[in-house]
Length: 435
Ligand SMILES: Cc1cc2nc3c(=O)[nH]c(=O)nc-3n(C[C@H](O)[C@H](O)[C@H](O)COP(=O)(O)OP(=O)(O)OC[C@H]3O[C@@H](n4cnc5c(N)ncnc54)[C@H](O)[C@@H]3O)c2cc1C
Image 1: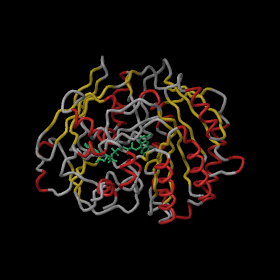
Image 2 (image 1 turned 120 degrees about the vertical axis):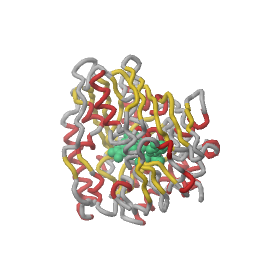
Image 3 (image 1 turned 90 degrees about the vertical axis):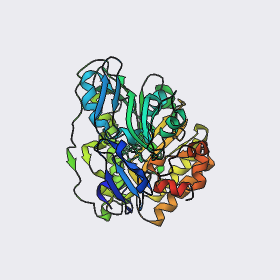
Image 4 (image 1 turned 180 degrees about the horizontal axis):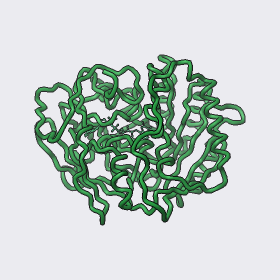
């Protein structure tokens, strides 16, 4: 089944049954199902949101707001609410998401289950840090209220728990005060990872958001060039949320020849020079353009064609930045690196989530058009280097992680496994747990 129940990378959508949930999921009869998995909005790139030959519990209609305290900024909502829906509701009241991904079209439940991080990881950590309570429905019919003090084991396993500990039916989360919908952005050009690190070290104490765009297509004198961005919310201004809908949509899958090594290089070069022209000044822009540039184009994943694409996102400790440089050389010479490679430095703010991916180090994420075995081998080669450097890859973006790699990346995997609901599973989980 493709369509809504494919993951964002599209590669080989499996056959699976989907059940659209409506209030109240507490009436679900889990016993009849063999293998179940909650489904948010399918913005995970790989197979952590897929369940071949099993059943998906589609949470799209569990999208009600339950309460919002204007004084404390605590919002309680059902898991199918999109981050974009939350922003529409809370921005005019002077509140914002404490952590957001690079798209606002993810559900709150999906965001918790992957313990998402944003450009502010170095100061605020992951979204799991802002969760007050979760209600988790287990397949034995138990509905557990979980927090740092109550059912703490399920709470910590469910944050970043990849949908395997039960169905989240309700979430209470602390939002962040906001005084303007604008962000003030500083742009700098850099060449090489050392220059990126120097900029990151210099700016991270004064800027809440730091991210860079890295050119993964150019070698020679342009090797490792990129645009560094540091931003803060403006201190005063309007409180007007971004648009509800996308401006442009990709109606069909692009033919394969559209994306080749020359078009990728040309795009990277064009993007680099466009951004470079703005370097030096402080730019003020609406949060929508800064946080969610890709949300302006609906279904942009179709530009990779019907065969889809892989995303690979990993982090390596700072002392192993040379490993990252070697990996970058491998990516450049493969000529298949994507339009957008995002580089950031993660901080050391711990998450309550047992399987949380972010940890201190340099993090790079990029797409690879699916060229079959050639692409798989490149990603596996990169993954071996990440393992050797003591880093980790991000399950939300993964489709190839081995059981051995998973055990190395997630030291608390055994503890996590104790909280898994026996009726829940996914393609990702069956691979990394050798089932
Ligand atoms: C353009 C783009 C940019 C992105 N940028 C970032 C980024 O900056 N940082 C980042 O961390 N991620 C990023 N991502 C990844 C994305 O944020 C995560 O994959 C997110 O979890 C997807 O949410 P979803 O609602 O689409 O859930 P799905 O992809 O459908 O599911 C994700 C996981 O959540 C589980 N789940 C969903 N609902 C529930 C529920 N009610 N109860 C229990 N489990 C549930 C599923 O079983 C699955 O394991 C990006 C993705 C895209 C497409």
